[in-house]
Image (cartoon, rainbow, N blue to C red; front, side, top):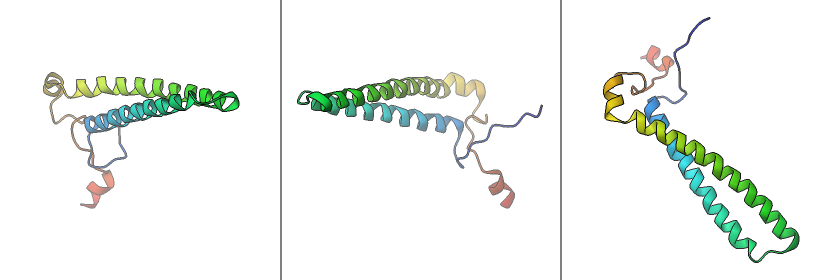
Length: 111
């Protein structure tokens, strides 16, 4: 069985910076869906009948997204904090692939 070095598609980025960006993305998405839920809830007060049922269905969908993005945000927050603690940075060393910027292999070969 052949082992491969992990590769990332984004050039000039480290694993640590990718984790930070993903954490920000999921945290922002979580906030976005909380605002969307709030908007839907305010519409619900004036709704009746079929419209009310449609809004309730939308709210359930948004609440599922809030839960999922919340878990992803929390998980990446933990990874982000751990990767950026002085202890881990010292233990792994800043020359560790986790902290080094990734350069596309084709770019390296061309230069």
